[in-house]
Image (cartoon, rainbow, N blue to C red; front, side, top):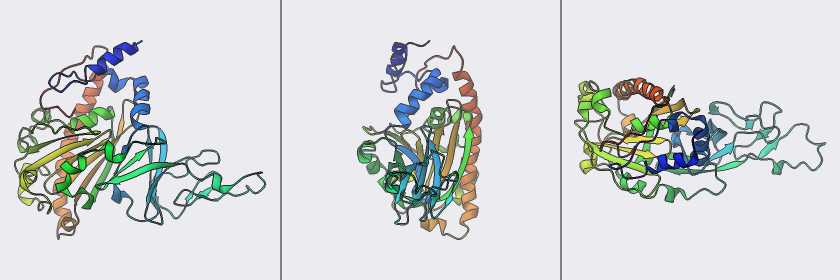
Length: 365
C-alpha cells in the first residue's frame, strides 16, 4: 500500500522548475486508483477540450464523448448555440445519443423520451397518469461550454472557473495564427495502449526527436527557445525549423502559403502548445495540427489527430493532393511515436520504475 505522504512527496518533487524537477513516477501512469483520483481532480473539474468548433458546422450536428467517465452529448442548437448535456435520459438514465451525426431532436431509444436541441423535454409517452409530472422539470442536465479561438471546452463543475482566467495570456501569444479562422481539413481518431499523459507529453518535447525520428522529422527542427512563462492552465514553446514543420524533407517544395496574419519570426518555425489537460497543438506557418487525448483507463487513451488550414488554402486548386503530403508527415511521426509510447508504458508498470530528471528539452512536460 502506498502512503498518502509518499504520493505527496512524489508530486512535490515534480513541481520545481524543469532544471530541478523530477519526473512523474511510473505508478502515476498505471495505477487504477490514482487514475480515479486524476479523473475526479482533472477531468471533472476545470475545463476539458473537445476539439475544434467546426465539428458542429450546422444546427443538429452532435457528438458523444465520455469526459471523466461521464457520458456527454454536445449539440449545436437551432439557434446556432453549441451546448453540452449529460448524456443520460431523465427517465431511467439510458444514453440518449450514441456516436455522432446530425439530428432534429434527441430521442432516448429506451422509452422514446425526446429532447429539443436546447435540452428541453418535449416528448414523454405514457406519462400522463404520473402524478405531479412536469416536462419542464425533466430536461437534460446542461454543462458549461466555452469556445475560444476555434477551440471548444466543456466543464462538468456546477460553477467552473472563468475560461478567460483558465487560459489567461494564451490568446495573446497565439494571436498571429488567427486560429479561430482556420478550418478543419482532416480528423483521424485512434487508440493507443499507453496512458493519456504520456501521449500528450511526447508531443511537447524535443528530446526524443533524434532517437525516435532520426530519418523523418529530426533534421527539420532546430533547438527550441526557452518556454514562455504562464500563469494559466497551459504551456508553450517555440522553435525555428528548416522549411516547414508540417512536411517531410522531400516534400518541402510543395508547402502551402504562410497564414496571411502571421509575420516575423513566428513564420519561421512551429509553436508547440498544451492547453491542459488534453489539447495539444502545433502552430505551424501554414496551419495547425493538434491532438485531443482522452483517458480510457490508466492503460489506454483515445486520441484524435486534427489538421487545420486557412479557408483560402483549402479552396486552392489541387488542395487535396498537397494536403496528403502534410497528412503523411503527421502519420509517419505518429507511427514512430506509438511503439515507443507502448514500450514506455510497459516500463512504467515495473515495480522498479523510479523518478528520473528532465532535460532542458522537456520543460513543457
